[in-house]
Amino acid sequence: MKLILEHKLSIFLFVFHLCKGNQLNQELTNFDGQLDILQVLNTSEKLWLYKESYRNWRLSHHQQNGISLTYSCLNFHKIYLSASQYNFTEQFSYGEEWQSVNCTAKIVLNDTLPHHPPKSMEIFDSRGQERELMTLQYTDSGSYQCSVFYVSSLSKAVSNDALTCEMYIRDSAVDKYPSAGCESFFTNHCAGTEFKIYSEKCKNRTLETNSL
Image (cartoon, rainbow, N blue to C red):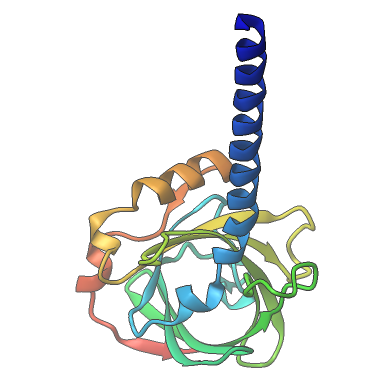
């Protein structure tokens, strides 16, 4: 009888762990469906580029006479958002001068997981030229305050292996520093040298914008 009970108990524990494992796998699978780039972009707040994992390069107009200019205080500010398009103003500064670029992004649907929300967008500059592909990899669940994107440049001037990370934080939370989850994801998943782009001085600077 004791052997029978022990055998039944072992079967029960095996089934229990199997069910828990299936539940965990299901949660991990479904987590991808919670990464919705539209939720991150759907805000009237500025999205500040807090830090990135590569040396400063971005647009050709960030260069002058062939010399790369280091920028800071970069942010996105929504103009229009739909299920297929995101129009925004990108502002950044180098030296004492602010620059402003009107950009359009095409929301990229997930072809492999058609029932999941979109995670990516292709960004075009004001001349309609492709710049980069941004793919959401992490966001604070529910609040969407801090998000991490993988960014691949579409510029011919940048090598094909230039896959990098960028962390964006909403205006109301940017001075509180990244959330623990956001910081942990960036640390564990973003290779390369880390460069902080945002500082508390960014909000205090006079915005005298030159359009590009």
